Amino acid sequence: MNEPVIDACWDRIGVFGDKSCPELPRHIRCLNCEVFHAAAAALLDRPAPEGYLDFWTERIALPRQEQRKGTRSAVVFRIGVEWLALPAEIFAEVAEPRPVHSLPHRPDGLVLGLTAIRGELLICIALPRLLGFEASASAAPSQGRSVYERMLVVGHGGERVVFPVDEVHAGVRYHPDDLRPVPSTVAQAAAPFTLGLLSWEDRNVGVLDDALLFYALGRQLA
Image (cartoon, helix red, strand yellow):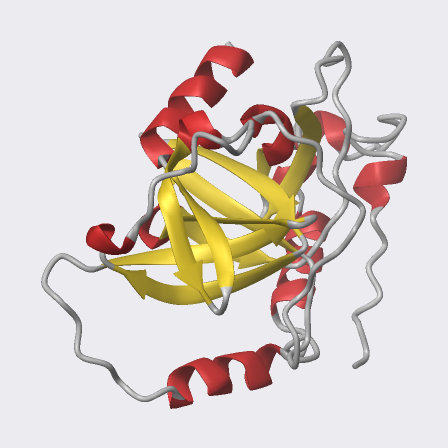
């Protein structure tokens, strides 16, 4: 796939560079510049990434299953060896990896920096840091399918953030009665944020409480 050639002048002479661009006084921010708009349009018009069509063809081809009343839809994702899920309705976008620009005076490790998603600068967070576990370098990808790192854009109460994951699976449905309690004998840092464990493709997936997660995030970002 031929990727469009993008001259990221905003990283050299724009707001993320040395700010020497002669157009900067007129536009104030690179987001307002026609050069930035043209680069964004070129990225949006590029061919679909490798595996994208196969992934969605596979999902659409799955047989339709009758659902119990009260079933919920979730997005399952992996960070290191941890499998987690959040409600599908809080997801705004599943994006390809992109540069993250670090912020000064954020030594806690929660905020990785800012990243641009469709021209909007969003705070990129380290979800494992918020949940209280270290992302293991040992990968445990799904077998028999292509795996791609992604950045997930989620929103709650008007606030939106983005966080990187090692792989993602959309359209997973479950019933709250199917959730199992987190064993008290297992020391899991993310347990306070976990509504329960979901069995999915022979894996234990921690279904997270999105309201509690965003509440804790808001307190730490304040």
